[in-house]
Structure formats: structure tokens, C-alpha cells
Amino acid sequence: MQNLRNIPKIDKFIQSKEFENLNGSLILKLSKTVINQKRERILSGNDTLIDEKELVQQVLKRYYETVSCGTKPLINATGVIVHTNLGRSPIDKEIFNRAKELVCGYSNLEYNLLTALRGERYEEINRLFKILFDIEDVLVVNNNAAAVFLILNTFAKEKEVVVSRGELVEIGGSFRIPEVMRESGAILREVGTTNKTNIGDYENAINEKSSILMKVHKSNFTIEGFSQSVEFKDIHSLAQKNGLIDYFDLGSGHIGNLPYNLSHNEPEIEKILKEKPSLISFSGDKLFGSVQAGIIFGKKELIAKLKKNQLLRMLRVDKVTLALLEESVKAYIMEDYDKITTKRLLHTETKELRARAENMASKIGDNVCEVIDTFTYVGGGTMPNKKIPSIALKFSLSPTFLERAFRECLVIGRVENEAFLLDFRSIDKDEDEKLLEIIRRVLRCFE
Image (cartoon, rainbow, N blue to C red; front, side, top):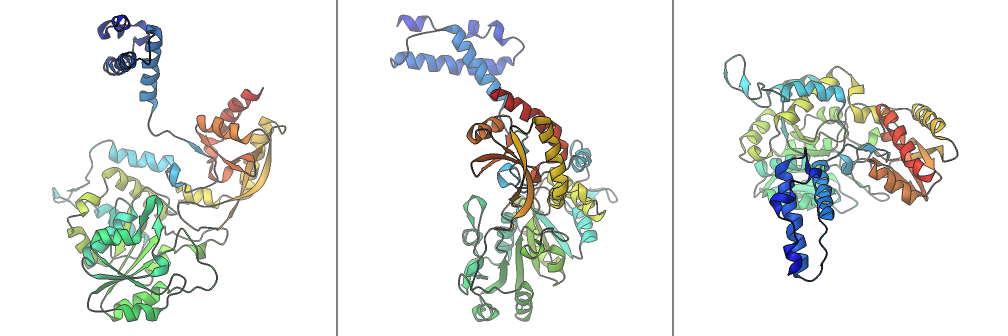
């Protein structure tokens, strides 16, 4: 065990000059781990050499990995605007800076400035949404799955919820509507077939246990060919006729027209609200272009019951989410759509994308890349199979190497037809200068 005696003592080891000006507590913790692992390898006969300089380097490597790990800012050059894996909708810097004033100090989150008494957490967002839309009341929870769960648990626990078989969707992360319904305590009543459901199917399913007639937007898949689904207005009328709750899970939902003939593929919030639905819900960070949240609009008496559900305490949003959402709604109210990054990226014309790409290509050199027309998708589980036009830089060098090299520089592109592309549809123009610098850095590896 001569080698064990040569293992450096912790107290002396951490005094190495390489550790100067570093956090002592973290260095001590990592040093113990590295030295103990070395001791175990020696005892198991898998190691015999002790190099103190090597141990120091191991500790330093782990130190910098620790302080630099976590979520990192990326340039999204995939072309997919609402990219689930990359954080969905980005927040405009001005929107963030406005919200920062509220979250970096104290606020009247639940304090009434007029009465000096406890206030309502959702009072301000309620006021803003009522200016933007003709609604009775609103509630915000941490995502749309939570909104679905809360609604079903509140109004359909041990009662039946009637849903078309063709709308029993699975959303990201293997969250399935039937499982969400079961966990909420609701009883699923499937009607129709996978490809075809009519209003008579809903009507025939209604019985004394029925509570909700639910429509789920098929946001992440399409059914082509011989198919039929029921419009929400017909479900709404049938529910009202039978004294039931009608509920539309919009999934994404959007405001105003969408470019490239996309509007008919996603329900427009304002049009659905004209039907005076009992309840609707949608995601805040998809086509709405704000922060992650489940936004619920509905009848005042129904929202009041949702607020009384004890589960809301676990599902409610914090001051950061509310502040960002409030500023996004203000931007919509003021018709300042450029402050909604998702909307801005989606509506950018291809001629502008081409001008930016050509400008960048001229600074790189046409011997390694070319500007091409391409197609991409909105993403985030919205409008599947609906292509939108875009412009990309196509590189002539090894796509496998480039994908990895750009990823290591925190730029995520895509490989298509055995070529590496940087798609400008999802690149904000404020990122162009930074991207150009990274491209030059990566290409220097080929010189």
C-alpha cells in the first residue's frame, strides 16, 4: 500500500497555487471527491500511478464544468420558431426589462393599494386580458396541461367527460389526454371513431353522469382522407341545451391572422370567444408568444370555482411569470407586435431573410456556403405538416463536423440532404453579428 501513502493530504492539496482566487468550499468538495476516487481505484488494483499535477487538473476541470453548467443561451438556427427543446417562444428584451422592474423588488402581487388589505393575485392580469378580449374572467396556471387537469378535477371528478376518439392526443413528454383525465378523477367517455365523429355521437353519450363536453385541438397531428370532426360551436350549443359545461382545449391558440395560409390550421382565440364558451384554455409560450403558462378564460362563476380548488395552490404561477405575461398582453393591447418575438419571426418576409443571409455569405466567402430557399415548420406541436418558406445558409463542408462544431459554440442548426444549414427563419436579426463571429471561428478549423 505504498501508493496510498503517496496520495496527497487534502489540507495541503487545496493550497495548490492553481486554486488561488477560486471558491475554496467548492475546491475542497471536489478535491475530496477526486482523491477518494483515486484511492478506490488503487485499492481495487485498477490504478497504481499518482500524479499530483494530474489530480489538480481533474479538480480544475470539474470546477469549471460546475460553474459553467446549467441552461445556456443558444442561437436557434434550426428554422423552427417555437422549438420545444430550445425553450419555445423567446421573450423580447424590452418585454423582459419592463418585467424586471416588478420582479427585482417588492410588488403589490397580493396587496391592495387602495384598501391596504390582502389583494387578488390575478387582478392585474385579469384587467389586462379583459381589455384585450371580451371575457368574463381569467385564471393562469403553470402550463396548459395543468389547466386541463384543474378544469377536469374541479368539474368532472367522478363524472363523465365526453371527447371524440380522434382528439385523444398525446402532447410532448408522453403526456396523454386520457391519462391526464384519469389522474384528475374524471371519467373518459369516448365517442365517434378515430377518423370520424359527428354531433349525434356527443348527443347519444349524454347521461346523468355527464359533466363536460370537451373538444381538444389536434395541434400536433393531422387526419387526412375520409374524416369528420365537430365544430366547437355545435358542441357549445349542445352543452348549453343540456345544462353541461363546454370546454375547448385550444392547445396553442393565437391572436390575429397567421401568414402563409396558416390561420385555418390553428384556432384563433378571438373567434372562439365569440361563441361565448364556458371554458377555454391555451398555452402562453406557443403561438401566443409569451412565457410558459396555462391561460384559462371562462364564465365568472366557473373561474370562481376553479380558484377555490385546493390544487390551485400547487398549480398557480409566480410573480416572474405574471410580470412577463402582463407585459406581453400590454404589447398586444398596444398592437406593438414586434415585441412578440414569435410573431415577429413568423411574419418576417423571406426577402428580408435573404438580404441578411446574403450579407453574411458575402462576409464569409461563397466558396464554403451558399444562400438557398428552404422550408421549415412553426414547431411547438402546432400546425404539423404545414411548411413555411425560409432562407438558409448551406455549407459545403462536412455536415457531421459542422453540426457538432456549431453545437459546441452554442449554435443549433440542422442537417438536411447531407448538408449543414443555418436557417434564418428562427434567427433574430440582433444575433447576426454574433453568429457571423461564430461562423468564422468554426471555419478557421478547416484552414
